[in-house]
Structure formats: structure tokens, C-alpha cells
Image (cartoon, rainbow, N blue to C red; front, top):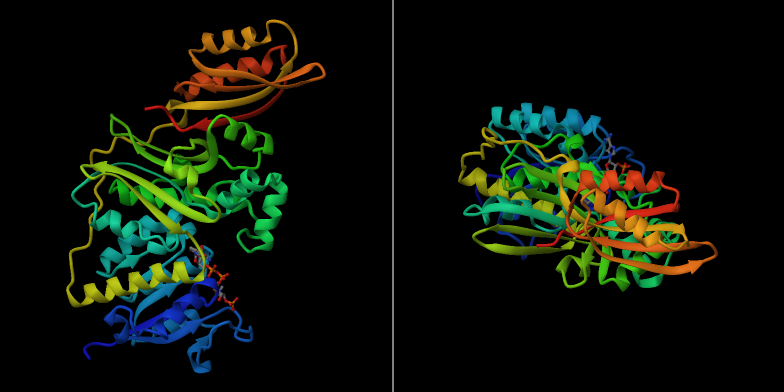
Amino acid sequence: MGQRIGIALIGLGTVGSGVVQILEDAVGRDMRLQSVDLVGVAVRDLSKPRTVQVKADLLTEDAFALIEKPEVSIVIEVMGGIEKPYALIRRALELGKHVVTANKALLARHGQELFALAKAHRVQIRYEAAVCGGIPVLQPLQQCFGANRVTSAIGIVNGTTNYILTQMAERSLAYSEALAEAQSLGYAEADPRADVDGNDAQEKIAILSSIAFRLPLPELDKIYREGISAIALGDVRYAQQLGFAIKVLAFAVRQQDGRIDLRVHPTLVPLEHPLSRVDGAFNAVVIEADPVGQIMFYGSGAGSGPTASAVVSDVINICAELAYPVQPVVVEAMDFPGYLPIEEIRTRFYIRLKALDLPGVIGHFGRIFGDHGVSLESIVQKNPHGDAAELVIITHNVQESQMRSALTEIREGTYLKEFCTAIRVLPEG
Ligand SMILES: NC(=O)c1ccc[n+]([C@@H]2O[C@H](COP(=O)([O-])OP(=O)(O)OC[C@H]3O[C@@H](n4cnc5c(N)ncnc54)[C@H](OP(=O)(O)O)[C@@H]3O)[C@@H](O)[C@H]2O)c1
């Protein structure tokens, strides 16, 4: 057998345990795994019981000392967090070690700097697991789509929110009940904000878009973000009656003028669209590219085995390149005209509001929408109770800024009893 490749594994939690299971049982997998040696595994607490067996002399609480070992060629960072993994990965790259990480939160903030450092030290940094866990999407985009120009990547990239919305739709659970269930099943953290507020999806679409459009990573504040906590069971029900499922979609769409529209928010997806049928904790991304057309990636976006599958595939790719080095991809952004502000997007909207049940009320709202250039596809009065009427409205494509000004006038008007929800609908055409 040729050169041995030493691995330092930083973290032995959900993902790290899956990585050890694959490395310890290489038979039947890629031959290159048989030249890989686990040099050591860093954890936070040596006394903690483990779900996988690792020889005691491999375990350490000193991750920095581990990555310094000369026999380590590849550092796998699956510890999570930002500051410590940032320092560790920097040090590993400076030492000339290749790095594999699943850490989207870190990459979305410091990725560009780490990529430059990797290039300067002529080593690789790979991160397939950071977007959609077990679904191979970054590497295919980089390699198999090489002949294409990607026009859009739209996906369900957060399994927790998809699980919650699926339970609301299928079992009529209220948002709070579905969230509590997701927490008890381990799909949602005790502090669920990163998922339900859309931060996790924002980090993933930042990384995915940079690969899709061959651009440097966008700053996170360029990506509009909206979470799911305002979605009521009533919205899910009305959406179903109107022929839609509510999904949190992450959008990366190239405009005619070259600008890129990046955003994450709940979206009404027509039931005939393939993303409407991606349920539970699953993830999916639909890529549109020229000339290949539409391609959908679907699978497990998280979990020990699926995420470890992506991590180890990065290790194998590094092993392959150590044998036959290729030039690193150079990301150019020379003529890039920038990102599309949320006010300039064009989309349909679903609006639910409670109005005073008076004659002329529908005409009143219709006039306001018309004055702001918002054309309505349908307006339906639901469940009138007492002196309030619930109105459910679907618009045609409209510019976001026009919709916002119409909603401001509606909120200030006398006919409104309660403004409930505004959710974007997948645009027409
Ligand atoms: N879980 C998933 O399905 C998934 C999917 C995609 C991406 N990711 C990403 O993968 C990374 C790891 O996630 P995870 O779910 O595996 O996390 P986890 O279960 O919480 O495991 C973290 C591991 O890192 C170790 N650790 C923490 N701080 C450390 C330190 N200062 N020094 C050494 N070791 C330290 C912990 O040690 P102890 O065991 O001693 O506490 C633990 O073994 C995160 O960046 C996450 O975003 C996870």
C-alpha cells in the first residue's frame, strides 16, 4: 500500500461518531479509506460515555496539540461553535494540513478568509456536510455542473422547520406543539432560534450560492431572512385549501441584470411543485442551470450517518487529490453587479387579515391594493364571526416594495381589525 494519511478528528458527538463508524469499517467502501489512519480524536470531556468505541490512547482534550502531530495530514472539524474551531482551522491550515468541516456557522462568517489561507498554504478546505448534511450538492455543483451556468438554487435546507411545518399540515398541531415534539425527538435544539428564525438556512444558502454562482461568500446581512414563528395553523389550512404547502425556502436566483437574489422565508409552494412534497426532516434543493435544465437533490439533511457520509467523502476527495493534485478553483467576482435588495424582488403574496364585517370592506382593500399596483388573483372571505371577517388574499406577482406600501396603508386604515400574516408565494412564470 502507498502513502498512509493521518486524520485528526476534532469532535466525537453526533457527526464525529458517525465518522469513526465509517473509518473503522472501511471494507466495501472506497479503497482509499484503507490508507487512512485515525491519529487522534479531540473531545471536550474525556470522562463522558461514548456511543462509539475509540481506543483510550487516541482520545485527548487538547485539540491544538493533536493537530500539530506530524503524522496528521487531514483535520476534520466537527465540534461546532465559531471561535475555537476558527482558531483550530487557521492553525491547521498554517501547518499545511488539509481541513474538512461541517461547520456552516463558521464558514458563513469566516469562510473567505479561511479559503484564502488554504490557498496560500496550498492545502484544501472542504465542507460538503455544511449544506444539506448527507445530500451531495456542493461537489456536484462544482464538478458535474461545470459545463453549465446556474440560474437558480432553491431549496428546503433546514430539516427542523420542515419537520414542524409538516406536523402542522399533516396532524393539525399548533406551531408550539410541533416545536416541542421536534425538540423531544432531537430534531430541534433546546434553544431553537437558529432554526426557527432562519439563521441556519441563511448560512447554508450563503455557502450554496457562492458555489452555484462561483462567487466569494456573500455577507450574511445581504440575505433577507424571516422565520416561521408567526405562522398559524389557520394559515397552513388555508394554504392547503388554496392548493399550496407552506415551506421555508432558501432562494439564490440570478436576475437578468446579473444581480443575485438571496433570501430565506416561509413560502407558499404550489402542490404540483416537487418541493411541496419534501416532508418531515428531509431537505431538497432544485437547481436550474443552462443547458442541463432542472435537477433536484433530495435526502437527509442531518443526522449522524448522513452527515458523516459527506464528511468522509471529502476525506476521500482529498486523498484522491493528494495522489493527482489539481489546481484549486479560483473564485472570481470581477464583473459581479451585486445582490438584489429584498424590496426589489417580485413575488406573489398570501395575506390573511381580520376586517370589520361592514358593507364595502372588500372594495376598500381592493382599492388600496390597486392604488399601490398590487393586482389580486383571489380574495376570499372566510369564517365571519361577530363583527370581524377573515379575508384570505392571493396576489399576482408584485414588487415587494409596492406590497409593503399597500400593507402600511391597510394597517393604518379603519377597516382593519387585526393583521395576521403575509407569506410570499412561489412566483408565477
Ligand atoms: N448533527 C448534525 O446532523 C449536523 C449536520 C450538518 C452539520 N453539522 C455540524 O457539525 C458540527 C458538529 O455537530 P454535532 O451535532 O456532531 O455536535 P455535537 O453532537 O454537539 O458534538 C460536538 C463534539 O465536539 C466536542 N467538542 C466541543 N467543544 C470542544 C472543544 N473545545 N475541544 C474539543 N472537542 C470539543 C464535544 O465533546 P464532548 O463529547 O466531550 O462534549 C462533542 O464530541 C457542527 O458544526 C454542526 O453544525 C451537524
